[in-house]
Amino acid sequence: MSRIGNQPIALPAGVEISRNNGHLVVQGPKGSLERPVPGNIQVEVDGGQVLVTRPDDEQQTRALHGLTRTLVANMVKGVTDGYEKVLDIVGVGFRAEMVGQAVRMQLGYSHLVEVHPRPGISFEVGQETNTRQFFLRIKGIDKETVGQQAAEIRSLKKPEPYKGKGIRYRGEAVRRKAGKTAKGGGKGGGKKK
Image 1 (cartoon, helix red, strand yellow):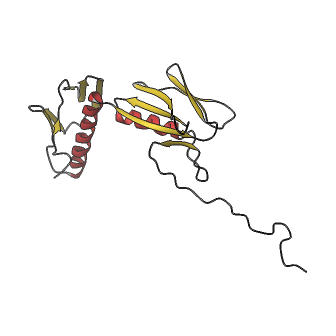
Image 2 (cartoon, one colour):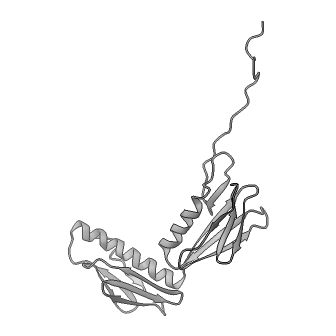
Image 3 (cartoon, helix red, strand yellow):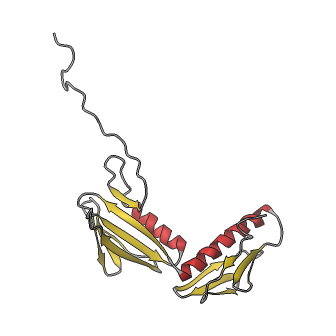
């Protein structure tokens, strides 16, 4: 038994689910999402709940059962509340600013880095009042697209382990390394004659 697949999904008011040529379409207040559903998995709406069922107990079908239920739940949450990820831009001289729909960042390179949003994604740039460091908020209704866009931006300048400079997720713990320590003596610091 798939414990995840058997859980019903609560359907909020204003959200509609329909099936169209093997695709599941979820429409809500924030927009519409569409995703293909495996042919043997059934998605039914029953009295304010969405039920995902499977025809047999084969391993592949059981795996698709839980996966499909999670994807449908993410779609329902996306069209009602939406998703967002926040990236902190940490480093002296690191900056970010909006240029139309895109974001332009200064990340310690000799050039500025400009990132354009994927379809359905919006950016919001801000600055913390106490630390004066910049942050970038990525918003959208599709969980996968929001996560992928955040991962691509983070990969532009990953946090380095010595000073922690770079782009990191809000709340991400960056493992720090100790730097080189000075050993006394320097050149010619051996035994005295």
